[in-house]
Length: 334
Image (cartoon, rainbow, N blue to C red; front, side):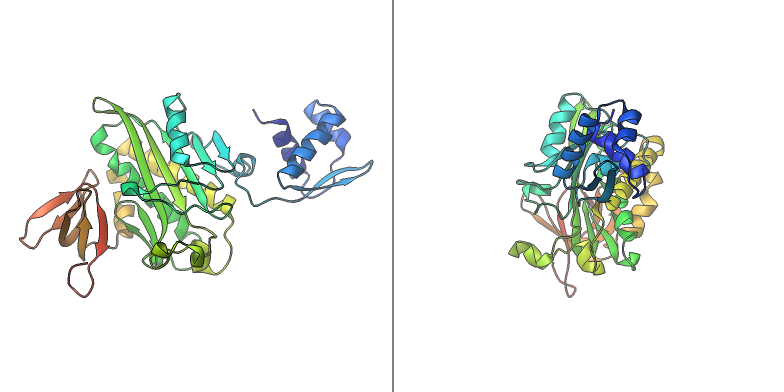
């Protein structure tokens, strides 16, 4: 059930920019005029522009650039994903928060969203640059009935959803690519990263937590120096700011669709969409593995469980379960 301020906000939205009397709001919601005023003040404190006419009522004039659950839910069409959203002004890591919620029994589809992270994480222990009020940082608790061997395909499915959502905001969808296993790129520059954590009982997944960070409105010139040459943002690519709330709604919708397909039919139902965005196929690559070893070869695609298929110089085909992949340059090692 929505909070008092959320119900007031719904009433003001329905007025479509017209003044809505305090008396009418009071009667509709079954609260006193004093409570209406208190809730309006709470909304103003959150950044909503609400004009008050003495003796007349209230009018919603502006909405803050914040990823408040009330704003996301106002246009969200999902059935189960992100129907419950835990909002954080700032947190160390949305994944850390979501794991705690999962351990406490959070339902399938529960989401955490933060305006900023102080200790955002990527794969292989890397940090994720997370400036506040510019991008999207969200983590989702999932409880699919799948074997642990299948779990890596869900990160690939999430990459499909992110890539397709980014593609809806750019004039050149062909510039959007998936870099195995978890990055989405624009013109070969990273714009999104995905992190998956899981808990299991024997070989069955208890829960997955998928963390997604998307560079939406950050200026690449402000990236830490080590990221500037290989990362970008959606707004920088298209030359205008991105509506973060609209992007989030669309992404949640795409995620629900691909996860439903994976649950009902398996990853093979989503795989053609992954292959369409996987631009490494047939190219020479180097894979830095977690043990520090490098493997060079030709990327052949992915197998049924999401591993990268690599053909080495000896002609052998080997599956790569995890690692950091770079494209080889000038025909030589990456």
